[in-house]
Image (cartoon, rainbow, N blue to C red; front, side, top):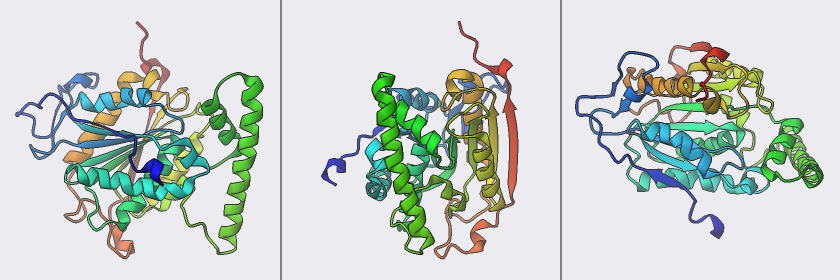
Length: 326
């Protein structure tokens, strides 16, 4: 546990103040004028966007995404769980989830409106443990919404092999055998977890992000996904989103045509930025249908936690909207 005492996270505060004329969001009215988005909340609180990277994600890649929000006057927190914790040291994930919640509280950001931007199953797995940590906390965070980018999806050996191969990298002569061995090893662990669950033993640590479909909290969720994703099929995302909508969650599906896994921003830059900024705007300005605690659940997780009206919308971003290379 000592190697995780100090999490390798990054917090960025905007260096420029938002315009005092912008009570929550100002926009020039044109859909492509993404530089006009500026966020503050109730004139004093800037939103905090927590970005949770995919398995093996380097921070230099996550910086490109956090810059979207920092340019709009949002505070950002970036963190990617270590690969070993996502795959074979998963018993450490509850601790990481609790520590990230503690970091937000210690930095006095728990009273700010909070958004999670979650990448792939690695980020979804981490968010799952943050969600569990929030349920156990005495003062839940003021979460306004969650963005799932290329997630979540069912656990499959083929997807696991591709993910492991991408993380290892290097020459195929060494990559393929190592990836195959690790995939088999992890698949055996998955199988043992399934058997233990079937026998009623259960696994002490949540290990499958697809179970987030039954998450207690009901804040709005945005799904960014693609019909060309070879790791997380579009059908997995839509099945998950439909289940969330059935539970009363306001869901938005945005399907990017032909963009690779976690590459929607690189392929459709303007459409991507407008989509996530519009989502933040809607969540910040929409009237809260629940209690004063911003969509927090009741302690007994009763059905009344899901009294919001079910809503699901879907939009398809076509190839002609792709970013033009200069």
